[in-house]
Length: 195
Ligand SMILES: [Zn+2]
Image (cartoon, rainbow, N blue to C red; front, side):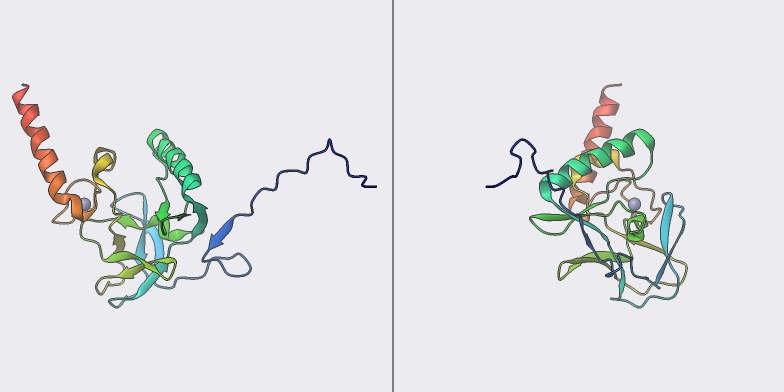
């Protein structure tokens, strides 16, 4: 006769988190091209520790693999936190239709890379991994930047301080720059008309 108690429910198994990019000991790899330091754009940033040739894998975006539903919840709470405390931001990276990478971990130093309107790197999906790849030769000491690719929707929440000549003033993906400029023009117009 089975003696298993029917009143005691087996504890709900919490799914073990799955991390991407860590070695078998759970340690992040070394990325000799970069170092973290104070940035004039925003908080800390990533800088070239040595000359980086064009089209080079600079650093991998490490993190936890999460399904879309879970990552949406995390993104919202990370967003709320960043609004209220001016710390952090949203570190969710889209991997594919079903899965995102939550990179909100100290050991994911790629999260420190700032956005720029004229970036020197690009985030690429390389066989299921996200890498920052250099778009041009980067001199030692130069800040590593990439296009965050934010949709136009929340442009007001994300002012850009990249300081590049062609800075559009907000962190918005390049495809939407035209729309952003029109939006701003219209707002300026309505503001002056309501005076
Ligand atoms: Zn900018």
